[in-house]
Length: 287
Length: 120
Image (cartoon, rainbow over all chains, first blue to last red; front, side):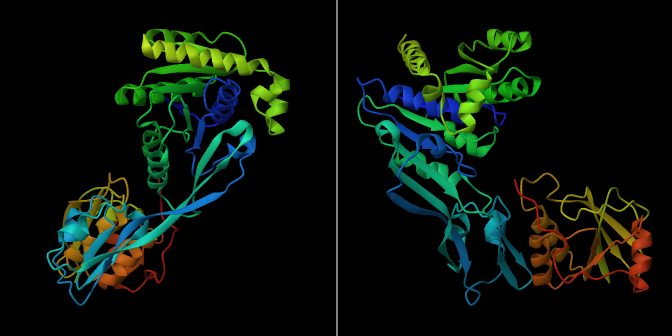
């Protein structure tokens, strides 16, 4: 089973929930420890809580066009087919803008003069290694200054091959744009972490819409719960989103997180609460 | 000669728009006749590459110069490759004013990108 943890709004507790769920499941004993994938490749931080020992590192890149000016007739076909305006014909010159290129290969395939070849443009790495409780930890890391994280998230997704009975937990980036969609793709279940604030609810609505569009069963976790917030309850009820767990707004939790501990370490009963929640989700899936 | 300007509306009296790739309208002005043709900026709603598209438009119009408030790195590289000179509005308010100052040699020419580009 592949579970994605997302939120819309940043800083609601995605990584807190994802890492605590991973530790909860790792403590189950009846199944192999989960695979954990940190998809927040622009600012990964799950390693702070799961403390992996990275043993493997693999460079990731996209193929970008290289124009042979000796063969180019400046016909403009490449510029015409590029959806991202990453290649332009200006008079007697054809220019490539690597930062705009998505590496789709259309220009290379459609150049009538075969004047375009491709080179690998490195954009980041994927790292992997064992973490706490035998968790199989992976993360992507986008190079500073590179604008496109989706190819790294796709590479992470592709390399996840769980053993039978092994759960995969993916920690999504914040927001609802392409990287989040890339992280959500292929999910069996989506956990949306929110906080009882207008901002949290606003972004929860957006994230829930993405989930509906992708057809992923979804549940909500309310973090920093500090009393009733009727708008949130009403939204979840009317959208058919079950609230699976509420984590109270408590100083002891905040202090623990700030020290690099996760919920299961701060309050061990969360291990059981996350396992129960997981089984509820799995049962809901099978029902 | 032909000059392309980024403006907010059609017409030679149009207020300037300092954004080259994202300004609503690109005005093609023939400085000999002061004839001004307005074209919608091709990249105004693009997710990226707006500056490249505006530069391609200017090059396609065989403009010798463009006037705007800002040129990002992609627009700058594209216009430079096309041999189109870049000038800044300074405190000009309208297209007509910018062209008059251009003809009087009072506009600052750009030799490097004036901002670091937009992403995301």
